[in-house]
Image (cartoon, rainbow, N blue to C red):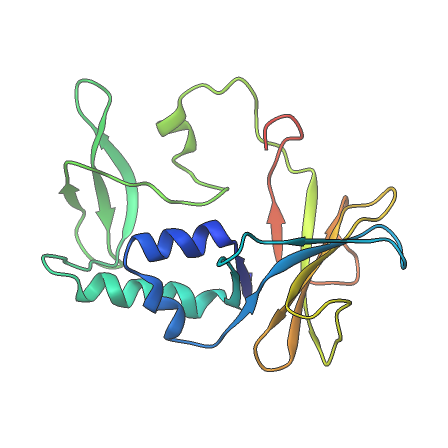
Length: 205
């Protein structure tokens, strides 16, 4: 998504890792609570624990800030390439990756710890998890919109609107007087470019 809402637990994790300054490298909005609505006059104010906050920002800026910190860390080599396969040892533990750069020769990299982060549509899911008791299925879509000059019911709160017979609508403030709106659809919306599809199973979220 173009924008992201980092929950208080994520902000706390950054502090514990000494990476809180990454949130200061770009503009972000501080949020102090959720406000849940089931009608125009029926709202529930759910504040975060005292001393905790959520942060809303442009996703790409946050990722680039994390990458910059990784580049500046000691004993780190930054390699941008395409992973084509995972390398396993005789115990079926992932010990490395096979890669190939455009127009280059295949290469292999090995490490004591290999972290695979390839998203919901990962081509390595089966290689890592093996046979799964269920198959992931696409049961909904999230349409992401940027809305300007919108006044939310409660300032500095992420607003969730619960609709009967439909998925929730989530809104939260961003810098520059913008709000992110996330709307769930059961079918692909015909009049909107789908920003991001969501894979989930109702029994295995």
